Each structure stands twice: as structure tokens, then as C-alpha cells.
Image (cartoon, rainbow, N blue to C red; front, side):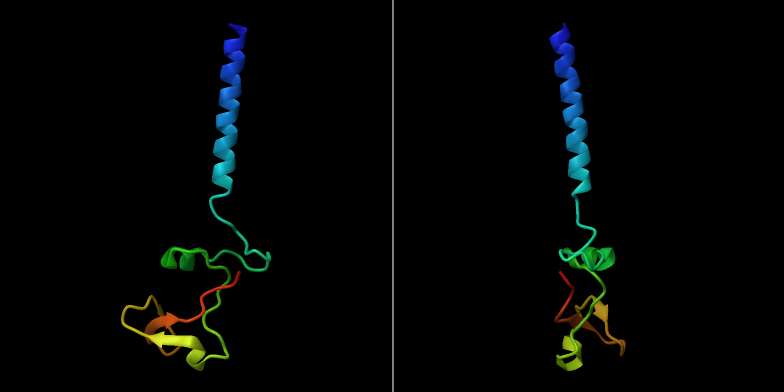
Length: 89
């Protein structure tokens, strides 16, 4: 009887720990270098992890913006399209 209680208690504790650990690692809140916070809106939009709010690169023409009707974002001019560079790591 005592061993059954001990086994049940160990099982309950294991399940509680597993639940806590798996929920806490669902996604990273900071980038790898810990400089940029997770951008949830863009992460859900592009179905990947996006950190910070960078769009485009200054060294590319039009900051790397590609005009297309299927694009998810709009640039400063209000044109619909996509940026070549999405986020930081």
C-alpha cells in the first residue's frame, strides 16, 4: 500500500514537472544574442520566429522591398509587397 502511494505521488510530480517545462519552452522571448524581443505579430503572420521590428535593409534598392499583390505588408509609400530581409537572430 505504501509503495502504491509513493508511486502515485512520483507520477503526479513527474506530470506536473513535465507540464511546466514543456509550456515554458513553447517559444523564445528573446533572440539568440538576447538583444531583440520576439515580434509576435510578424511571427504569427510569417509562421516563423521574428525578433525586433526590422524591415528591409538600407543597402538594397527600396530597402529590399518587392511589390506584389500577394504580399503581407505595406511599405512607406502604401504599396503592398514583401521585404527581402525580415528579422534579427
